[in-house]
Amino acid sequence: MSDDSIQTRTTLLERLKDWRDDPSWQEFFNTYWKLIYAFAIRSGLTEVEAQDVVQETMLAVAKNIPSFKYDRNLGSFKHWLLNMTRWRISDHIRRRKNLAPALNDEQATETQTGPANRVPDPASLDLDALWEAEWEKNLLDTAVSRVKRQLDPEKYQIFDFLVNKEWPAQKVADAFGLKVNQVYLAKHRVTELIREEIERLKKDF
Image: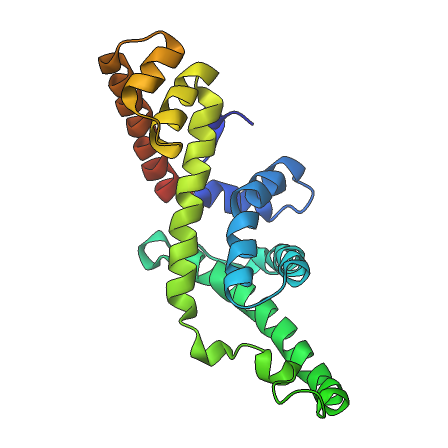
């Protein structure tokens, strides 16, 4: 699906209610899996557990999306997806705690900080703040990825070397046979495209 043809989130969520709509589900997965994974990691899960949370959350979304009613004014989709993810994370933490007593008994003579004591307490984490931070990061990463696909590779490289790799403007200009003002102009154009894509994503996703 091309970027120009992406529908609004309301339309996408309606299309997800058809579990056979593979392109829409792939679009949804590509947009949100990194967000869910990063949130799970920051909540204290291992990489394997975080990968499981991604899959389990996607299955939960598929099961519950038919009854979901989107209300942009309430920002309900972000909160709804947070709950879908948080419940899966809580399941994994609960499983760990259920296994911990036996492991603690085995290790009691070796350490005073057994597995149960190393399991993060969800109540001690500001999950809403974590989710908001990861949501914004995912928004930026998705926007950059989409803009990158739209641009001539060289134009994005100029932006990447100047902004991400922090090359001096003159070094970038020399590398691409440009004038310094052309480098800054290229940076400005790509930055504006990213900002526009972020605004589009805020409306669409």
